[in-house]
Length: 362
Image (cartoon, rainbow, N blue to C red; front, side):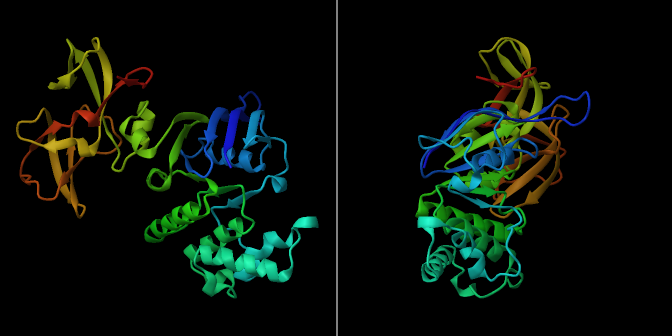
């Protein structure tokens, strides 16, 4: 089932006198292809959860339309939209067993859709097997781990075979290892069922690892849409470049003079652009330790990360909130007693941004 947003806008009235209304989602236009997993990504307050609530009908759109296929569902009640919702806090009924929790949506079916007890139990078992919790059907939620509870919530959302599956930060309450395991399960389930899925998260690593397409938002406005790797490699503005990537991109004050690009006194390359002040973003993996390199920084320390190592250093032109970090192979030699360190740069990992608009300069 494809989902189409046609100039979708949601405005919340500001209850503080004299303050402007809050535009949570601003003129959102996008088509989610049938059977794809979309990562709706952005910092807190960007409008991603509001967009999810608009899809399922928990919020009414101020302007614009929502289509499921060719059907306009903008004013359709939530119970008639055929969506499955998985919340951040699981939202399981503590007094019911796993089987009863999964069966609950089926018990509310009426008319021609009403099912027999045997049919409901068979459907519940089928959904439980899909998320691999069929051995826990008689347990209560309190007897399950966080990851198992989240699987119950996913099974409950899937049992009615929804047109669209909505996941609102479903992994944020899990520890790191369990989060990794559960997101892999979500991807497996989505591929098996081929249900169009919207996955809301503020964690860019989660979104990039399992999404077919990511939609990056800021203050209710869509910043960039594309395949995760393409957006990472080709950010449209400084916000996108800074939001995606772990460790974060290193950002410097820079300038272009006579078709040369400078960070402080260091000339790091050529440019066809006219003379101007710019921001220069350099991905950590784009910095290569090289005694004959073009960028010199004050050396601080080397951090062991397993397969790769991280070089931490400083440069007075860097405006990043954290130290400069360069990701280097573990076998790269670095003098631990050196006061400075020099890097050559991979051109495809260096980006220029306008100082005023913060838009990408090509």
